Structures are given as structure tokens and as C-alpha cells.
Amino acid sequence: MTLAGHLQRGLSEMQLDLQEETRFRLLDYLALLTKWNATFNLTAIRDSEQMLIQHVLDSLSVLCVLKKSVLAGRRWADVGSGAGLPGIPLAIVCPELSMSLVETVEKKTAFQRQAKIELGLANLEVVGGRVEQLPAGGFDAVISRAFASLAEFASLAGHLVRQPGRLYAMKGRLPEKEIEQLPTSWHVAESFPLRVPGLDAQRCLIVLEKE
Image (cartoon, rainbow, N blue to C red; front, side, top):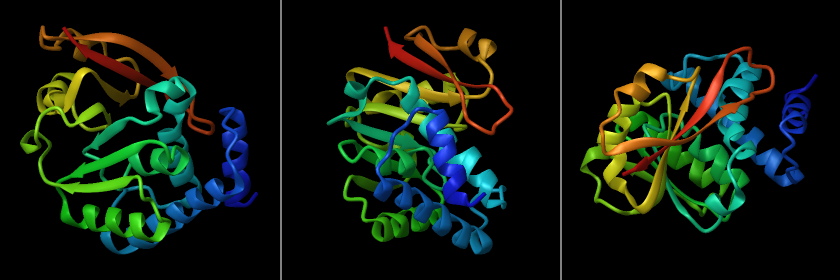
């Protein structure tokens, strides 16, 4: 099966009905990531099909549990975004969403800027620098994928969200110990299991709110 076929099958299993142009853009992102990864080592995954599953489909899995109203017309930040995950796939699929990628490593922000240009993502902003040094209250929500523990995530990025704002942490299995270690000013508002087609591993989305 072609990569396009694997993408379509995965999207169908996730019940995400995307236009052909959007699917092509996701594949263009994957091709660009594969090209840059050969030189700059942006991700340890080398196989294109595994990149599709563990990066693109994994990033989009949050759309299966989040309400559209949470995304449309909102300002989001993806902190510790690395190769632009989950921010770039979300920006491709949700053009009504304003997404800022926050990353400290220059080779990764260079890739993100190139992806923004080549994919024509007007709703994407690349922000180089440390998350804790960014101004407070600039976003409606902040998302992270394998960025830090929940306590560190809340401590480093909590100031970015305006009230009422939320932090969204993409994790593997439910991190019960991390939840216990949250600062008293933050609590788990919701948690959702995530299903990623082709991935034999537990995934979940933890939603944090400030007291």
C-alpha cells in the first residue's frame, strides 16, 4: 500500500474526513520531514510509514476527542514542538486555528520555518526561544507532546494561557504519579484515551485547568 493509502486508511479509522488537498499537504509535510531528517536528525524514526503513524496520525488523534469549538478561532501554542508536532499537522487540518510553535533548538525552528513556507501555512507562527521567557496570557490553550512531566509543563507553560485557559498534554499511558505531583494551583479537568491506527501503545490526552 502507498503512503497515501496508509494515510487514508488511518484517517478513515479515526473518522476524520479530510479534503484531498489537505491529505496531500500532510504527505508533503511528511516528505519534507523525511528529507530534512536525513541531514539534521530531527526525529529518531526513519521509516516513512512509521513517521506517518507515530507523528502525523498521533498528532491528529486529539481531534477525535476535542470539540471543534475548542479549536476554531483560537490561539494555540505547541511548546517543545520539535519537528512541529503536533502543531503542524493540526495547523494543516484546522486552517481556522492559529498555531504558534515554541522551540529552542535552531535546526528545528529552521525546519518549522521552511515547512511554513513550503506548505503555505498562514495560520502558523514559529517562535524561537524558551517557553518560560515568553509573555504571559497570549494564548487560549497550550499543547505539548512528550515535552515534560505534567508538573513541569504547568510550571513552564502555565503563564501562557489567558483565563479561562487550558493546558493539553499528550502522553502514553495515564500518568497517575505525575498527576499526584501537580502543583496545588492546577488540576486535571478531563482525560481522554487516544487511539492511533497502527500504533500498538497506550496514548492519552490530559487536560489541565488552573484553580
